[in-house]
Each structure stands twice: as structure tokens, then as C-alpha cells.
Length: 308
Image (cartoon, rainbow, N blue to C red; front, side, top):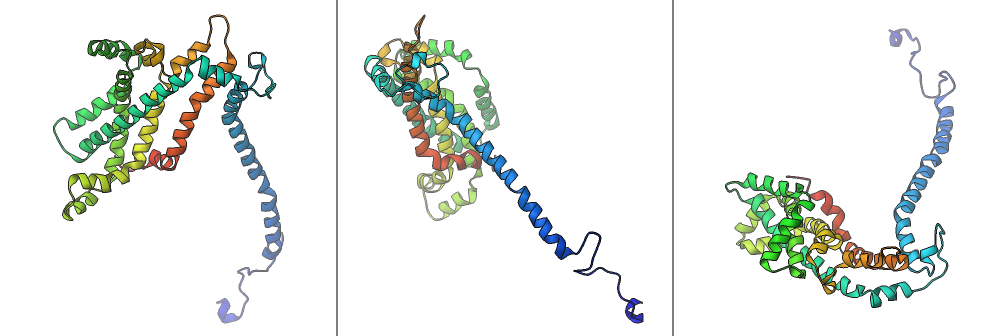
């Protein structure tokens, strides 16, 4: 009726006064209010990131600074080292024989990574692509093996290695590390293999590709991030493990770095400078390994969860 009688509409228009003022007048106030609120969350994020970096990097700084501190044993809570010296590293490598321990650990860790990754990938392809009897039972068994405590396996594996004549052997220790990390690697790689569409393999078959060519050219590049993620787990397991190495290795020439590190802890005194220098040397190969694989590591940690 308002359109017919000529009565103005009661609907408010842009620019009309409603309550505290016009829309055009309130807009600058809203912008200024938002501008005042933005620095606070940004400052909070900066403070949180700085606190996280300090919390994560301070132990590494303390380790390295104590390694080069000539007064590491009496350092106390002093933030900065009293000076710079490389004598602790020389003592660790020359007198402590830590160079041999590093070589032993590198051989064992690389062997465990290579063989566990290859075996786990083949097993993951088998349980993901083929249907056979007791398939689900095997998967459950693989998961149950991962739940067994490490301490419960020391005595059975020691007796088995003694029967095989592989005590005090880097090869025997490598086999133990492969067996220990294999169950987790199979279970993790199974998700990566299952996430690859079967149609890609079928298309390769139709094009005349053999199974080996299909595996090398199609499947392996797609599951490479998963192989990297599992290799990180296998490397850290073999590099930091202490109980098996202490139980199986009986000669100092065969020691790995976790066993060699305990040489600097005395009954009554501890050479903290040597301990920190040895800890720094232990950390360096791990950092190098992470730098080499970090490109595929982030994608590998999440890609396997797409399909199981």
C-alpha cells in the first residue's frame, strides 16, 4: 500500500541514522578498533615462538657450549662458557676411541635402515595388494609384536644369538635392530601402499609393464615418503639403542656410541667436558640424516593416513 499511497518506506537506507550514528560514521571506528586489536595476537605469537625455540634449542646450546668450555666441570649455572677449547673433542676421539664407536654405529644404523626398509616395503605390498589365508591374523600379529616390551626380548634374543654364534658381532646386532623395527615399519608402510590406487598398477599392466618395472617406476616413487618416515624410525632406534648393544657386545672395539659414552662416567667423578663433546659428536650424524630426508619427511608422516 505504501507504493500506491506515496507513503515513504520505513526500511532504513545507507546513510540514515540508526542509534549511535550512520554506517559511514561507524566504519572508521570499527577499522581503528580492529587495528588496535591486531598487535596483541601477533605479539603473543612472537613470544610463543621465541619461547618454543628457546625451550627446544637451549639444551643443544648447553651441550655444545659445555663441550668447548675449559671449565665445564665447574661451570655451574653460568650461561656463557669461560672460554673456547677443543681439547675435549681431542680427548674423546683420540684417548676415548670414540671415532671407532662412531664408525660402528654408522655401519649398524645404515644396515638396519636399508634392510628393514626393503623387507618392510615388500611385506607391506604383500599384505596390501594380495589376498591370502590368515592375512588379517598376520597383521594383528605384527601389531602385537610391536607391543612387546623391549626388556622382555633381551634374554630370548641373547640365547638365540649365542646359539647362532653371533654374539660380539656387529652383524648380529644389526639383525636384532632389523627385527625390532620391522614390525612398526610394516604396519606403517601398509598404509602408504594401500593409499596408492590399484588402477595405476592395472594401467601399467595393460601397457605391458612387468611387475618389477611397475614396482620400480610407479609404486616406489609414490610410497617414497613413507619409506623415508620409516627409515627415520629405524635409524633412531639403531643409533640410540643401549640395552641390546650392552648385552651382545663384549669387546670395546665393537662398541657403539651409547656404550662408548658411559666410559666418561666414573664411579666418583664425571668428565663433563668429555661427556658433552661425545654427546655433540653423537648428535651430528642424526642432524645430517634429518637434513638429507627432511624434504620427504613431513609429507611421509601424514600421507599414509589417507587410506588403510
